[in-house]
Length: 349
Image (cartoon, rainbow, N blue to C red):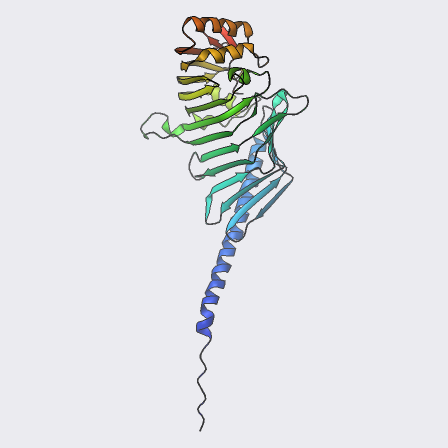
């Protein structure tokens, strides 16, 4: 009598594959839900911005990236503020890990175009233009923007841009790091800006200050009343913020223009109704005379050559070839060094 061998059940062999298929099906359901939520919330934010006076749009919006990422690609996106300032791009790509949709990376692979209201459009090109944002569930998310080796070219008919190129431009924003008991801490944010080895345009004030070299700047400050950055009008959100008492406090920075260097500080800076900066800025300068003299020789940019030349003479008398303490005043829409008006005050909006 022949004994038939017992057939082994294949259920044990198939079980791992079945579990993988079930997990993949559940993950796919989650991904489809997440992708749908991303599209819905993005479109809702666009509608909210448009109702608030902004003009936000795009030609086409694609959502993909299955299975492990959510990737959003917008063709011809544009954002125009009520002030007339605008930012456009051939395309923007944003991506997040599907298991961590709280952190996004955004890139502009084909560059950007910046519209400066009545000043015209400048094209921005760079090997890398990217931003990252995380902490979207916080009141203030963490934001980082980086432009690697950017170039700036004004379009025909547009006003020249202050710089033509830079090695790096960085911008960081985060919730204010301070004890919760500090007055205003909950409504403030920390801001850091870096401009590394910027080249000024030919004949412009930046090139003049840098003595045909490069300009490097790092500025950090606390933005008070950041919760009021939400009221766009004809001049933009910074105008409404300024009218509501917004200001920059604990301003600290470093500048290097050619062989001239300076550290700067200010307790508080605010803005006038026309957007020009107001306040006092203290500088501990090393060899400031070459920078001021270069500014006096430059053209355009609203530079007051007579005032700058007077500042050169006064600085030389006080030892401007070495180390010297200076105070810049932003008032009446102008930048003053003592009694000498150098140029228009920086314009925020």
